Image (tube, rainbow, N blue to C red; front, side, top):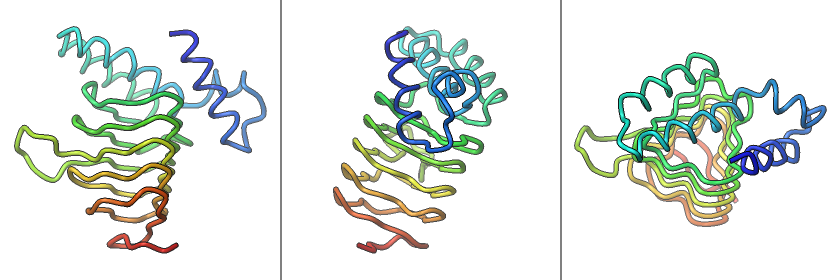
Amino acid sequence: MIGKFREDVRAMCDRDPAATGCRVVWLTYPGVHAVWGHRIAHRLWNREFELVARVFAYFVRMLTGVEIHPAATIGRRVTIDHGMGVVIGETAEVGDDVHMYHGVTLGGDTNEPVKRHPTVEDGVRIGANATLLGDITIGEDAAVGAGSVVTDDVDPGTTVAGVPARRVD
């Protein structure tokens, strides 16, 4: 687990030009801390300590401003820049090397107990305050513009922006 922590810190240092050093990231970046907290909550959830996982996730949210459901799947080197207001729902799947900014929502669009949150594939960038809703897939290396509302699949390598989001590249 320590290796993954180091990997997360290195990823944030590489992606954030404002990071003045890895020690600063390790100690003061709430998005990094939220991902670490989620890893613990997710392990508890998968071991069927669901209440403990949800209480732990609640405290992580209070400390970081980032809400990640313990059942959500988060890949390696996922970075959340600034963090505040990010919400990742229960059935969301986030791949490796995803970078998102504050205010991002990976939300559901039904109350049924089915896959109802987005799948974000490897290498995706999601701008501040973007909202992705439903069982959609954001393809590998795609980009979602700030403030966009995405309700349909996004092809790999595509950039989308707007309300509703449309291809811009």
